[in-house]
Figure: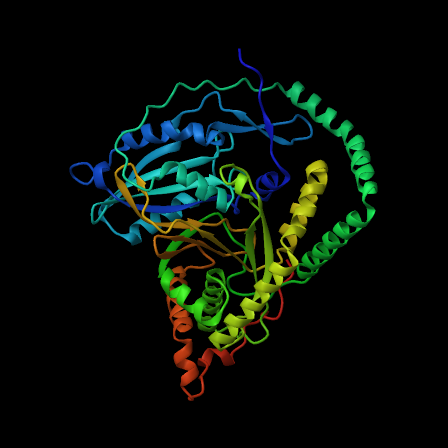
Length: 494
């Protein structure tokens, strides 16, 4: 019998388990579309056995994918243990759309799959291999719980399966034996010992601070400034909009692809970064969407959570979450696209100078040793919901990738929806494309395809800014801008 093994979850990873409810699934993932290549079968099928065998051979590089949750008795803190009943066939599933399947059918299937929560009794991931797509293609719909990966580490995990060149041979999977899991009594004993050791750790930390009090004071002052700025930005409600209504468990999924070269053209001409272009595109699309819904955007405070990676180079091959966030207002009230863009560039530059994303790290470090505080913080965050939208942008490789002999054509990511957030926007840049994945509540955003079209229009507006500056004709607002949606000045109390 091997040595007993387990690993506690970090406070950030635990928070995503606490956020999960019937209507708020906390899985990441998305839809990847491939040329069938050498994985194709006569009649339009796909070699699922070969795909499963290849994934099995790569699992040693992602051990979390063979681990499940266990819990400390009474207290309920989760830990990772090896899954003694691990079955790859359960996690790598095979399905199809009616041939010849188009993107509309694939989007509908992805929405249904994203509506189903992951089983917490098993490792928290699923990969659905979808055949039947027209033009000799297949897709993989991937779901991985946010407690396992963040957006950046998720890209690293994808890289364990995808290669920069076609691969036709690979070593078969080595035999795997799960390590024994601890008993409930052992977990409880270790947790109590950890709690008893906390006072001595605090004393050592205090003594270390006394060795250089000036440096400690400066560090504490910076942490407090960042924490206060972060808290202050979340202490008032954003505006209520048609996108921010009570959500249910069912999802729609849509996507849009935009040229990365166009985004670079914009930021090279007007300054800023590709991420600023992405945020300005989303802001322009939200503006168009709200105006079409007869919502006045004058005075609207539409706030976005923008995840920021805290990963160091040595963290890039690890699972778990090393992520914080900015909380900023998108200037959807601004009719001029150049002014919207410049406002976002100035705001993101300010956040970079102040390192405000480090503020959230202060709270999670405290929560690491105070489990009740973490639970309270999650409940408060769920009740306040101080944002309208999540926009996450993850850079990927700018060259083709392959799953064995099948070339990856595109990959559209998904981000979870929180309570009262009917839409989430995730972006993955790959091989010259900005790939927008749109995850939405089925009932709150029934016209998700129209928002996808709004992204194209908003991006085109940004690319044409220099033309609009040369044109002396005044801009005319749509008629809907004259109308005001009830409650647009602040979130309604629940």
